Image (cartoon, rainbow, N blue to C red; front, side, top):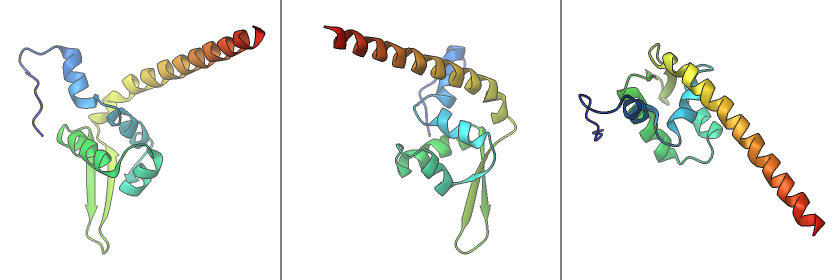
Length: 122
């Protein structure tokens, strides 16, 4: 899939985001870091993403060398996905994103709790 990114002059952060940017790519890679998964497993793990979106995101990750796709010659066909060796280099970035997200969620929940408490006082 053609992306509009200039590999010669583009920003390095933009290069990273061109590979793992979007709502579902980092989530899919996080799930695959724990081991090979079949498409149906990924669909269950990411229920808010459509089947088509998961397929498109996996294809892009595969094209960028982050995910490997294994097709088994069986009936019915079995396909499994796993993070490539190169894709494993994203693990520290994704762990930092998880940590930040956990802190952010806790902060937002605390703010909501505080505002509900204040609203109940009036």
